[in-house]
Length: 441
Image (tube, rainbow, N blue to C red):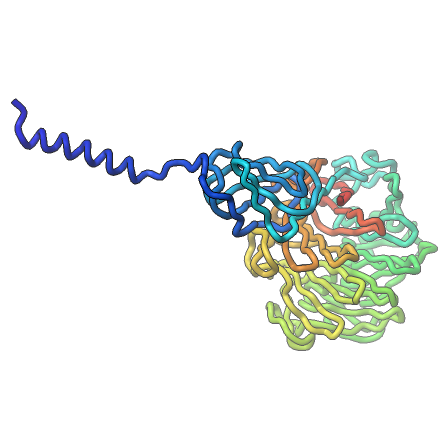
């Protein structure tokens, strides 16, 4: 006969199992109440990227939830009673709706799925300096590019010490530079450069190049003549303002021009932003020279290795910073603010300074209040909307050069960017030795 203690232990164990089982939350496959939406992770997202919706009374069975944007079905990839995850394979914008067992809820804020289609405009993928058509041409670690008023894309082909140009059909030719390192002015065919980095083109077709090997700014006229526009012709490091060659720079990097022919320089080694007038007069418009991340007036704000620049139609400048992992804005009044980035390396999307970047480099303004940024550390393209929301819109983060749409595309060390009048974006895919074209829809 079993002892009373064994019988007690048996019934106690059964009771415990029943109690534990009753406490386990069962999947809410068929919720009785109507669904509600309390939040959406991204108001804008690229093709293939996950959007997370929080709320109540979702079905824990993914197939029982119908998610649409403007009546276009989304792909639900995971589901719980309070959270759904989905992605889109189509570009669409409009009302987000969720239907569960015939009961429908909508979200009041419009959601946009943006399509970025990436292709290779030029470059075989192997290092070289061959001119030619499209992928028959070669580059050697191109750093930056700029779109000219003549419809050509100009490229600072850094390790070839040349300036190249690309027609709309992908034909590549050399504008200036023998390929040898140097600082020789003159006709394009005899001129030399020393690691050209930044490039910009003004409305008259003049090309400006930051030559980091000699710490100066070069100018190429539409006729092809190369001269030293600002900074010492012999290569003198410094931070002096002044007229043309009496001024000095320290690792001048990204360039951008405005409608009045002024050239702006991200003076990386001096942690400052410089301005060169059309007459060649150099001044410092923001940055104390000390490394930092302080916002405020132009004379008190600090930068930490500014890399590239963009300008919008209102004359606001935007700066990518290597060591601050952020995007700064200099308004027309000279006030400096941080518009995106936590200050720490990361990849999270979000509003303004809650989003994170990992080595943002290239930047362009699309003329509609949006910015596009190459996030070099993850090999992606990020979008900053006119309202300040940051979203990842292209690139799989793997670090390989892959043509495709949205998350199906890939970049390998993406650096400088350019944008044409039709809103197409161009990316110097540095490690793959290619120039990529990104069509936005």
